[in-house]
Length: 77
Image: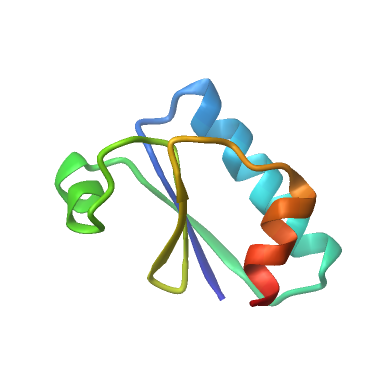
């Protein structure tokens, strides 16, 4: 599973990455986290507000930081 964190590296982006990593680890998933900081790449996903969470190429959430439990639900769907 590829989990991408879209954002410039701000504190909110780092918190989203931390929550996503914890969620995937607690679910014992085989995953890789990739940070996408390039604005052109971020806009290619159709994301206009960061941070955003992308799972296997699908934008799951943008503009907010979901908690660990919410992210777990996104990862198992």
